[in-house]
Length: 197
Ligand code: IMP
Image 1 (cartoon, helix red, strand yellow):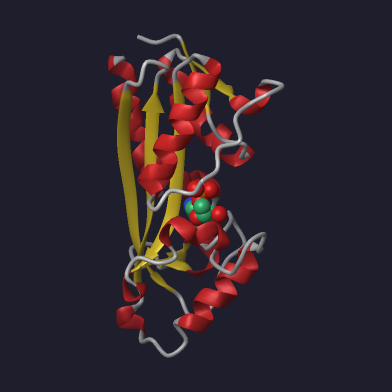
Image 2: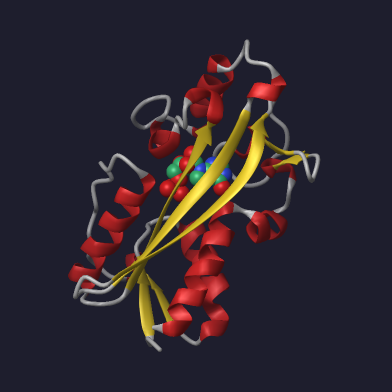
């Protein structure tokens, strides 16, 4: 089994989530921000998969190490999968989470509850410097709530309603969200891959 892996993200939240999920594997998990220099990959892919692969491959070459990266997004059925790969900057470059929520609620303002189905999707890429590449995917289905509810977590969580819990993601404490989320599911599958490397 591999001994260490670099996490190609600058997000503290993701670094912690990945580290905590992989802790029982016996692999040293090192956030790339631990190093003085790290690649600043331009996320210009057309899909989540393109971006996850690009981040993992660039970092694997840069660090000459195994690397794990992820890319996630919200896909709304009524909008044919938008904002998708553009989720972070749906309302424009440098926009805030609240701007994205405002834009999405406005776009769906006349759309009935039955037609507001959506999913969060994560793609995880694991790469090594020689070009070996493994992918995993996780999804969670929900409905875009017309009103914001809850204060936990981040991003679109206050408007991502999960009927099974009768709660939005922002009403679920992180320790609950992080067992059912798109990222958690993709990470569980990534763990199975890592165990075999
Ligand atoms: P990233 O690739 O994980 O950085 O996700 C890109 C964007 O998708 C984020 O900036 C958020 O707007 C949105 N997003 C991804 N995962 C989540 C989540 O778990 N909750 C809410 N929003 C998310």
